[in-house]
Length: 319
Image (cartoon, rainbow, N blue to C red; front, side):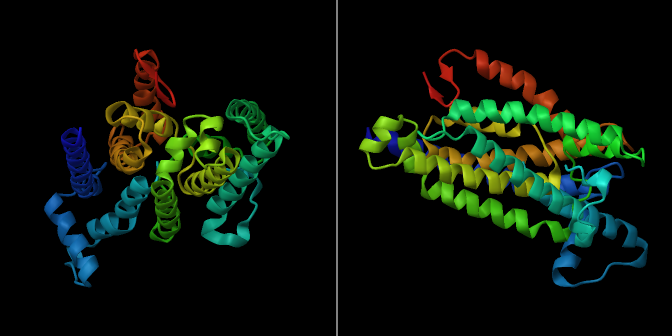
């Protein structure tokens, strides 16, 4: 038994190392490739000059700007990640370049809090009730957004809102990168810290309470963590579907239900997946760019259907 556990632990460590190396190799490749490909050697030279404070020839200034100011923050944000009516109303203009992301964050935060308050009962928050409340309110928010776009006087908001709701990293900048990176790291640190409690929670409320884990308190903490993480990422990338559905469940199928392994591997898989999804969205139909949600749906829908029909697997745990 101990030998099997050691072998499994080594296999898990090898998988984590392989994913880190794959992500490290994918980032410079994704930075190099695009509608106007730039050789990997030139990309490495530009990045090295930026890191060390070096210079590049004047003839390379355009390529240097594309790599440093456009593609690198976008690819890094794609790795960190996984809209608002402000497009039509012009609200939060005092925030300048952060107006759209700031409004998106506040809107996502407000919507999440509303879902929680409406789904809460005197006996606590039931997961099914929370999901159903979120689904119902999402239709209401979509209808409101459609009405705002319909009555927009500028006439160009429809395309922008649609692109934002399907996800995009086209507006990524270096200034937008630190906050989501810090939030994601903090969320992951909490999940790793409470991984054993998450395993206990999956046993059911009665078993959790008997083992010293308050299920209601744990769910509230998870809800707050999810709201902050989701709102922060939606504020910089829009809504990107299926990543949060497919990646965690695929990881659990490979590694088993233990959260201590999943909370380490799933983020790496998601980061690697989004780097290549963003690259595909940029190069699929140049010079136009596909919304990220289109690409993730094309990949995610069939994969999710396969997962649903997979014998012996139940979402949230094994049968």
